[in-house]
Length: 247
Image (cartoon, rainbow, N blue to C red):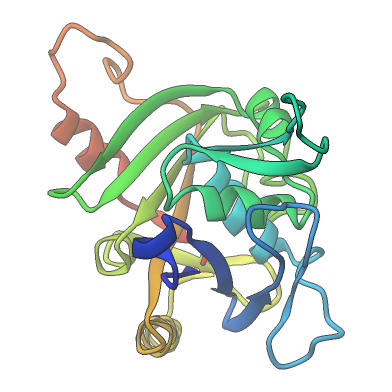
């Protein structure tokens, strides 16, 4: 689960990630504006424990990054009369920019991730489906979902990444990343804990997105065809099941 602070969303068009939840633990995300080099991710109950080395945190942000189209770029104002000050400028959906910034705080950068996991399919967000879905290629010999991530990729050639409304995502998950960073069957107490975390964070006026993934040995036949044989709805139905809830 990734939470973004809506303060300033209407007045300034800005949003930033301030908290996330993975493996039964809550993490705080600090920093200033769109600067991916400021702040960090750490356990909310133990500030000395960084989330940058936690497999669940890293895989949650990896999937969120793969399922986003936003960018942040450093630009220098060199116009006449300007003082040459550099600033980080967002480009893309205001809900996705905070995910890109948060991922960079644990060392995950869009340019590198897109090379390691090239995208082969995208189903854009829609108000009806309440989610966005992407499929990225994976090297079968790679076992971790990104460097330092959860060991869930071995032998799979593609990975489906989904982000969206928690109630839509959770009902499609059959496993989750447990407290020790391993993929486990999604138990009832885990679902209760996730639901409680979502309620708690929502009560703080935070926008909450759930993130899940599904490694696959291959895509169903016809999935990548553009001839209209398989509808977008059919693609979502086939891919959005047996998901692993990341956070």
